[in-house]
Length: 110
Length: 121
Image (cartoon, rainbow over all chains, first blue to last red; front, side, top):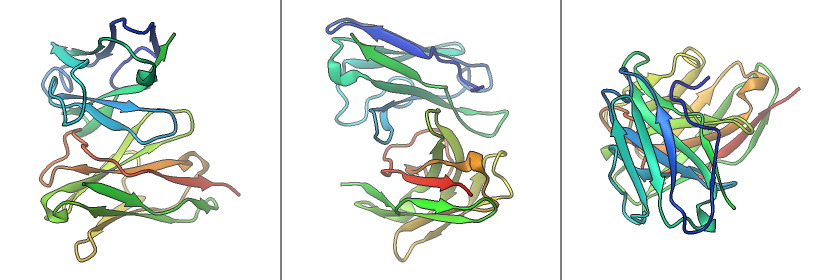
């Protein structure tokens, strides 16, 4: 059972816009930054969004992050086949005194 | 460019120890910290702990506290994660990732390629 809750799966067709949610509490998302990671099949995770809505160098702006209260979302617009991957949210948790991850969402591009 | 290169796969028996290395390049090692994350087969990501390459300060997840030790060798820009008293549920891919030098927050901007540790009798 992960501290941050994500839907196990999501899907969309090429060109579509898809959102992935991440739900937490006042001890994590409610008071700390959220981070998003993309894990392509068989590879290491890659930082996608930092500090709620910032892009690391090289990440296309098709990916965007937002946060409201104790929930956050990752939106992917102009969906492409290469976006098929697992997506994880992460945040510092004040109660656990450490970073926590969501359980991950497997995105399928139909 | 910033890179983290991890040691190769390991097979260990229950009760044994494993030590995974993570060699950094492309940046000043002591300006950052290293976090360790593991992923059991078919499962999600689990944060294990963090070490500052600047101060040597560490912070471990409660789940592995007492069994894990994280160290760095600044002369070779290498971080190490040792896990003792291995159990079958420690079977996982272990990743190192670049983190803050002062405090881990969840912001891991570069990851190693991962090291598979298999615990089996």
